[in-house]
Amino acid sequence: MSSVKNVIKDNYNMMLLKDYLRDAIKEAGFSHAEISKTPTGTRVALHVTRPGIVIGRKGSGIRELTDKLATDFGLKNPQISVVEIEKPELSPSVMCNRMASHLERGTAFRRATMWTLKQIMENGAMGVQITISGKLRGDRSAFEKHTAGILPRAGHHAEVIVAEDIAHVNTAMGLIGIRIRIARKEKFVPEFEMKVEKPKKAKQVKDAETGKMRDETAAEKKARTESEQIAMEEEKMKELETLEEEEAKLK
Image (cartoon, rainbow, N blue to C red; front, side, top):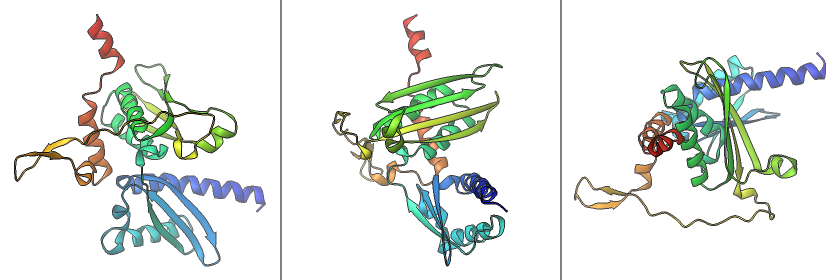
């Protein structure tokens, strides 16, 4: 087999592996996988938002995943490591999956888009662009593009700063594609001057024992699975006003 065919075969296998991992560890908030071949085997680093779900009780999840990668995908002696993502909202893959889940649950596409845009910018992104296309409103395909912040679109800066991912979701209307591009401040470019926002106050919640109001803890903010995260976001999303609702008030 020629070297070109080997490259094509490897890329195809990586695509199948990514699709499998996206579905298999969906609840863990899968972002991406880094695969490198070594003399002793294959190292697979899984970047997820909730490592505990991937590892499982007493490592059962890791063992099952290792056997699956070895038998179905032909990886020699796979050695899996799990890396936790510090800010899931700055990962295009995670946000694509979350937005796709919102659309699967029946959330209006524009409301889901504006909510995702807001979440990404509030978590320190330099800029973001969300493109959604497909059967959005009727039989004809259409697309919408929403942008916020500073997002280089071409040149060296775009290659260094911007990360992107694409996801597809089947809805009652038809197939919808989601593309999210995020520019991160960590890879800052001197030409762009960013404004520093003041930190927001912590949300007040009622203590079940004392009955007094207190600041919301980090454990209460974080959901245990991606499904819980989606459900929490849907409750908050109801407070978000779309352009159609704003126009209706003005009439």
